Structure formats: C-alpha cells, structure tokens
Image (cartoon, rainbow, N blue to C red; front, side):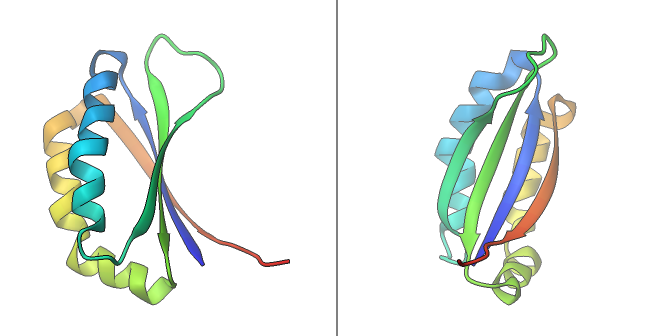
Length: 102
C-alpha cells in the first residue's frame, strides 16, 4: 500500500480558509475518481511559529502505477486551483511512502 503525503506550510492569515478549502474542495476533487482513497488532513505539531502552521494531507493509493496515473490524469485539475487560490501563502512538499507489513 502506498501513502501519498503532501505537507503544506500555511501562513497564519489564511490558515482557517486553507483548512476549509482542503475539506470542502481539495479532498472531494482528489478522490472523485477513486484512484486516491482514505483522505486524512492532519495538523503537524512541532516548533511553534508566528509565521504559520503545517498540515499533512494524506491519501492511500493501491500502488505506484495508480499514483502515476492520478498524477498524469488528475493532479493538475486539483493542484492548480489550490495554488491559484493561495498563491505565495502556502508551500509544500510531497512524500511517497510504502507501508511495510510485519
């Protein structure tokens, strides 16, 4: 199983709007085809910052081929509106994790 995680750093003045957008717009748009499943938005705790807050957006993907398909066919329709809306107020990086069964 693949965990597709993007961690966003969000400036304080758009933090509440960002959370609402993620829950109301980003998650439904990301999961509508069923390629990404089990969305989870989480606050990243760590060193407090007056400059903003960090959030992790996770999805489960069955395998890397499905993730590549989502990236090629769907991601632009989801990520472009997010970046257009928040512009320089957010920054992010993506991590792809593969779970290890034991």
